[in-house]
Length: 136
Image 1 (cartoon, rainbow, N blue to C red):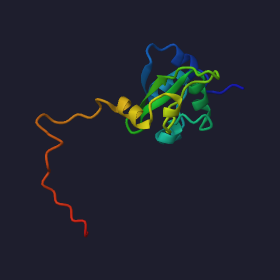
Image 2: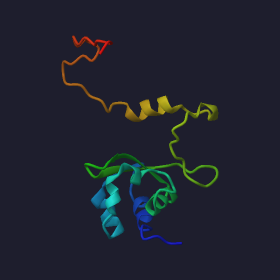
Image 3: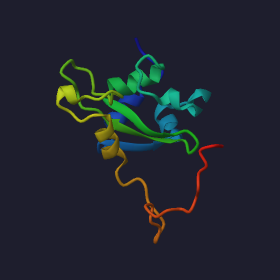
Image 4: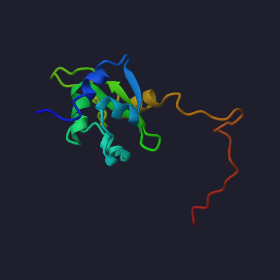
C-alpha cells in the first residue's frame, strides 16, 4: 500500500548525519504538498506507528522524531538503529536496565545535557530569598 507521504522516506535517507534538523516547510517541500493543519499538534509528530500515515513512513525509513517545536515549526529526525526484528529502535519511556541499557533518567540526562544555560554570574544554588508558606 502506498501513501502520499512516501517521498519522505527517500528524502530522509538521502540526508547526511544521524540528526536531521528540518523546518516544517522543508518537510512540505520534500513531500510536494502542504502538511495538514494537525501539524501544529505535537502528538501528530509522535513516533507511534498508528498515529498517522506519515509516521509509518519515517519509522519505516529508519528515523524517529525528536525536539518537535510546533510553534517554531521545526523538528529533528534522528536515525534509529535497526533492531534484531528488522524494525528500528525507538526510545521507550520505560527503563531498560533489564536489557543492559540505560534507564529513563540516564537517557534523559544524556539527551538534555548542555541544553540549559545560565546568565553569566547566576548561581542556581544560591538562595533566592523567597519564603514559601505551606499554610497557603
